[in-house]
Amino acid sequence: MAGRDPLKPGSGSDPLIYSREAAPNTSRLETILSHLLKGPALTYSSGLAAFHALLVALNPKVVAIGDGYHGCHGVLRIYQKLTKCKIVDVHNPDTWGGLGEGDVVHLETPLNPTGEAYDIEKYAKWAHERGAVLTVDATFAPPPLLDPFAWGADFVMHSGTKYFGGHSDMLCGVVAVNPARPNATKEYWGMWDERIFLGAVMGSLEGWLGVRSVRTLELRVQRQSETTTALVQWLASLQAGEGPKEDVAIVQKALSRVQHASLQKDDMHWLKKQMPGGYGPVFAIWMAEEKLARCLPSKLSLFHHATSLGGVESLIEWRRMSDAKIDPRVLRVSIGVENVEDLKKDLLTAFKAVLNDA
Image (cartoon, rainbow, N blue to C red; front, side, top):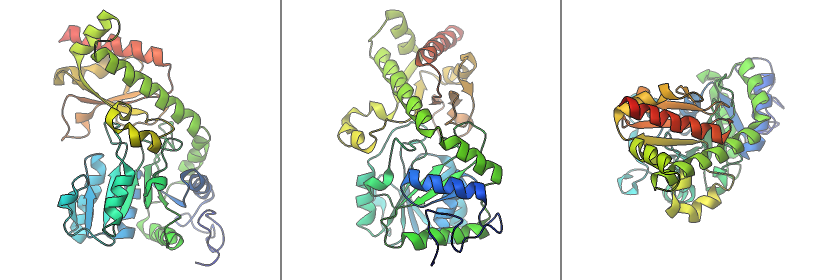
């Protein structure tokens, strides 16, 4: 490992001789991400490729995981075909029988699709007292919103397709290693070596797009998060009967629930410390009926009906389209950089339209 500096990809014995090993654009992006994430970072062809690489590197016999992105569960099913790995509920340690040294506790926070957050420090304690590794998927709270390493995470992953990309035009996955781990450098370069044979490398164009995008990361994410919190609080207030009577009547009839980290009032004693930069740009709404949820996207003008998230444009998705297990009344909302008052008007107009059609 001599001469290999994990914060300077492409240096030492890491020559730029073959693009599956390293390339100028991706190495440059990794250098930037390593500083942003406060730990040596590797890029992959997608977020799921990054998760798969983590499993290959750690080789757990037991994985504790909860609800969240269904794609990670799909990767785990493939991993199980080769390893017979046991899956347990991350939120119920009583089910963790057999989970021990070298196994994985995988926490997604904030959660897809609700935007709700979990106490990383608590899960780190549960994992570490068993000798397990805590991996955190922090896709929905990139810097400057959240630093999972500060709360005990061993590895952090992101679907860089979302906020690191930020313009809906690239695929990317990221894994960062906590530099405080005793073997952090060895683990980083072990994953670097394995990536050569997994073949899950980013293309040169995606590396260039990533470097372009992270230049505006803080500007985009802070605005998106602030706008999201304002929208969520506005909807919650109308649901509670606070506001213009006509608006209250529309929202109370159309919506049954709003979910977002900023609404977790009982958790603010740890949540404000964990996410000092804001509560994330994604939230979920539950419509009163499935029919209303299916029809709402077509009534919106400023929100695009699309599956992804993290771009500068606001998106809404009837979540049942991509996740067959989720309640059919749920819509995931990803906020862009538009004016918050414009988004409020668009939502109210759309709520009124679906109610008129019902």
